[in-house]
Image (cartoon, rainbow, N blue to C red):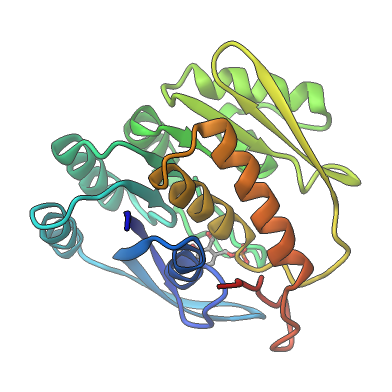
Length: 257
Ligand code: PLP
């Protein structure tokens, strides 16, 4: 059994964040562990409060895991603020895990800033260079690069710009852009295009968290980046197709074990 760690925020409603990550890990047959960066009070209708965990407690969680257990892959989600980012970067530099999947979480679908705007530079300078793969959606790719993305050509440009910031691979997710859900995977040389049909549902809460956790699980299980991304896109497509209409707002994706 491979061991996979999520460093992310808690979603009380169980659709995104740590909860989605652990469900995804279980569905992939890996052992899930968590470092909680923030606790959110949220449901399908929005995020109502957030309390960040102290940098000391985040550092202690990281140390407790890495000093005891072999970690085959790490997924990073909500990182809130500059101190949290610095703490995580120090942990990654110290323990050097093989696979780091960075989901550069910024704003929730309901519009809440899960990353403080002033922490953007720290995310770019401190975490991007440590990532095996970074998985921005269109909005995140725009914030990271400063360019406006309206087409696949713009997505390509963004992938090049982000690659130059230090990650080994970049996956720009185009689901918010077109009729089809087209993602671009860039390895520094070639752009691979992955397209699936867009599923017509409002229940997409936690899709980014789920995809990045699936990639981390597949990397831990020994797949190459290209295989891991392809399998994970299939996984998230099925999870969205079977998403749950619970709550009054945007329901969560569903995980099969
Ligand atoms: N809550 C937490 C703790 C998250 O980490 C994320 C996304 O990464 C979200 C909420 C956002 O979920 P969504 O935008 O898919 O509704």
